[in-house]
Amino acid sequence: MTLNICAQQNNTTPRMENFAIVIHGGAGTILKENMTPEKEKAYRDKLNEALEAGYKILEAGGSALQAVIEAVKVMEDSPLFNAGKGSVYTHEETIEMDASIMDGKTGKAGAVAGVKTIKNPVTAAFAVMEKSEHVMMIGTGAEKFAEKYKLEIVDTSYFFDQNRLNQLRQLKEKEKAVLDHDGASGYAKPDSSEIEFNIDLNPDKKFGTVGAVALDKQGNLAAATSTGGMTNKKFGRVGDAPIIGAGTYANNNTCAVSCTGHGEYFIRNVVAYDVAAIMEYKKFTLQKAAEYVINHKLEKQNGKGGLIAIDKKGNIAMPFNTTGMYRAYKKSNGQQEIKIYKD
Ligand code: ASP
Image: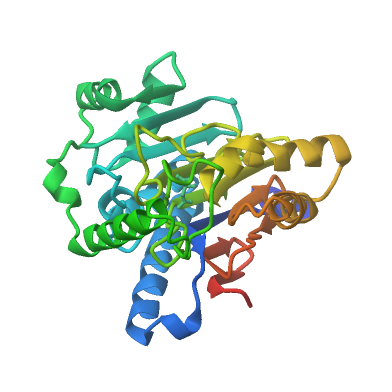
C-alpha cells in the first residue's frame, strides 16, 4: 500500500497552483512631492489589507469572484479611496456610487449605478448578477433590491466627509470662474460642454475608483470595479465603472480587466473589452494589448487613466497614462508588489 502511494506520487507531476490577484485604488496625478510619509503609509497599508483579503480566499481555494469582492470591500470601507465610504460628492452635494462585477467563467455580470445608501456597492452588483435576470440596476430600484437581499444599507450621513465636501466647493468656485470666462480653471476640458460639466480632473482630488481582478486555482477569472464617480458630476451622470465592457470585463479565454480614469473616454473606447478583443483577434499578449489601449489609443485622445488586468496564465498588466496609480498584486509564485508612482 505504502509502495503504491509512493509510486503514484513519483509518477505524478505535482500540480502547479497558479493564482493571483491585482488591485487598484485609482489613477491620477499622484506625485511623491505631494505625499507625506504618513499618507503614503496609510495608502500602502490599506492596499496591502485589500490584497491580502483577496489573496487569502484564492489560497484557500475560493473563487476569483469572491476574492475580487472581498478586496474591493476593504477599499470601499476606507475613506482613502473614491468608492463606498470615501466617495466624492456630486454637484448637488450628494453621493452617487457605481459598481460592477463580471465572472470570466460564465460571462455573467452585474452592476449598480447611482446608488446612495448601499454600504458596499460591489456586493449589490454581485447580487444583481446572482439573484436577478438583469445586468444593471440603478438608483432607488437598486437600493430596494439590495435591501431585499439583506445587504447593508446605511444612512447617507455614513458617507459624510468634510474634506471631500471642501474639494467639491472649491471646484464649484472654479466653475464659477469658468462661467465668468476667466478661463484659467486649471482643469482639463472633458468635452465641449465644459460649462455644464466641469468635473474634477485634478487627480489627487481625483480618480480614486477601486478595482480588483483575479485568477483562481480553478483557472477562472473575475473582475470588479467600484466608484463614487467624479467630483462635481451632474444630472445623474454615470461613468464607466458600472458599464460592462467599459470599466469592467472578464472572460476566461482572454483576461479580466478593471479600469480607472476619466470615465467618458473609457466608455467611448469600450476600454476593458477592447483589451480582451485585441488579445483575441490580434493575438497580442496581455501586456501589449493593455499598453496599446492606455498609452496609445487613449493617450492620443488625451483620455486619462489606467487599468489592471490578468490573463488565464496569471500574467498581469497595470498600465496608466497619469503620473501615478495606486496598485498592487500578489501571485502564488511569491511575487508581490505595492506601487503608487510611475517607477
Ligand atoms: N472612472 C471613474 C468615473 O469616471 C472615475 C475614477 O476612475 O476615479 O466615474
